[in-house]
Amino acid sequence: MNYTKEILYKSKITGTYHKTPEAAESDGYCKCGSIKKTKNSIFCDKCQKEYDNKRADEQRDSFLKLIPQNWDDTVKVVYDENTDTWFNEEYEVLAHYNQEGLNIEDAMLIEGTPNYLSSIEYDYWNDDIAENFTIPAKLEKALCTLNEIAENTIGCYLPDGCRIELSW
Ligand SMILES: [Zn+2]
Image (cartoon, rainbow, N blue to C red; front, side, top):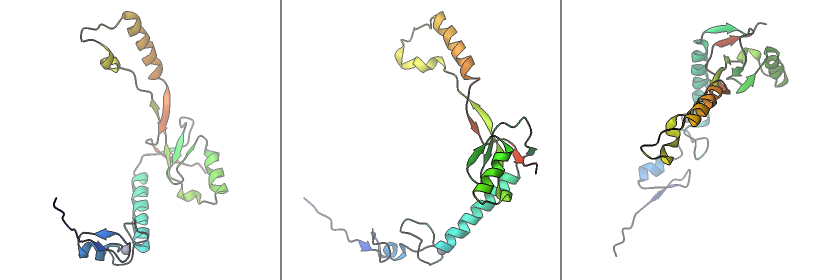
């Protein structure tokens, strides 16, 4: 049997072993040269904050690009990107922000659009049937009825509607 001895280099910062001294030397350091926040972080504290702020700015920019709409009777469900919360009524948003001591100006409300259940197609049974199988009329009728109900059933709401503006 042949054995190959592999030399590994241990990082002074993270204690992780590396194949090259360069990799061991740079392990644990952020791109700016500071030591990373934790062993598994990509950045140091300062760069992480800069990255987070940049992401938040980008998120707000794309939010502001959405078509604005007032919270009227046509609006059923609203998602707040800022607090990751769904709301049914306008007053609930204010109450939530009050309760949590948050600034209502930071709210990023997006109208939820209904996501209906998908229909069941014939190929659902592909693994169970012979090539020459013909779907019985009774089953076809039942499937039609089932699909009609499914396609009109809201499974969830997706935050991809208009930007909702509060009326106060
Ligand atoms: Zn850094």
